[in-house]
Image (cartoon, rainbow, N blue to C red):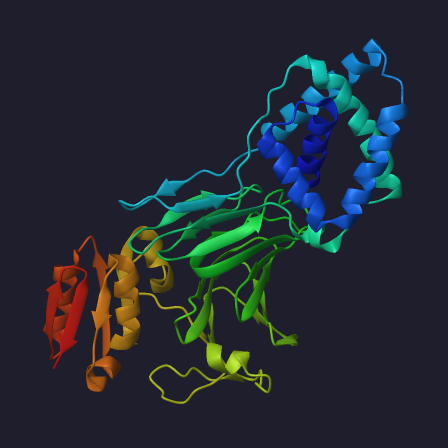
Length: 373
């Protein structure tokens, strides 16, 4: 619960205008936060013996409260732009404007005064409460993508089966987001407030730049591809080691190695087409003739691209892109590499094209694709 929500509910209770649902919400919070419970008791004692506020003070406090609420609700909100048939799943803590009769304005004004007093001498400083600020979560299903704008103006494209979470106010010294899946960021530059993306294995810190991060929990690697500017990457299990990327650099992190406590943070040579496993591998992003962007970012333009990738990795992309399950029991097929760029092809057209370059058979049964020699 945010601080603002706490004082709003408590003001409503003081004035006798709280609904049963609001009373229950406040009671649950007070039971979970003993410090807040002590402060409300103190304020209620003061409220019971204090004379009512003057009408002039009530009016001034009410006008100030309306102005504050007006400023709050005029803040920019997310803009959603789905690129597929399915809409992104948006999980957001509910917010509603509570309209009450002017009869309880005096309670709001008095609670604000008493609340300020309590805040100064009994800070709303429970660590759990501070860290439980309202969070915005935007996620996409398999088979869909989304484009959003963060409060600072940063543009984010979310690939299929991805999720991004960030603090609701987004006004702290650090602009922090949590990413699961794949996203392309075009970050608004602000040297006073670095932008940090947290994934399961790495943190990516930038000031203002454009780059792609791919970090799915069920994939072997986490990849960061820099398009312009610079980024600083830190391993979560080895924060002393920092890697700086330059434009067109691509860092590949082995997820299994990165989660190991004894992992070495030395950067190995490009391991493309090599079976040797390395914690960190630095290479260049891939470009193809007649394509205006790097292959790693073509998904933003609704193009599915493979560049000498084994079928077992391609299968994961197919599953997310078309919302299907791929069954592939033969190990030889799983290791066979394929390349290609596909735009607007349906699942059957994609499988036909891959079959032309590979020696395999396939069958599509509703939302299941089976591949065999």
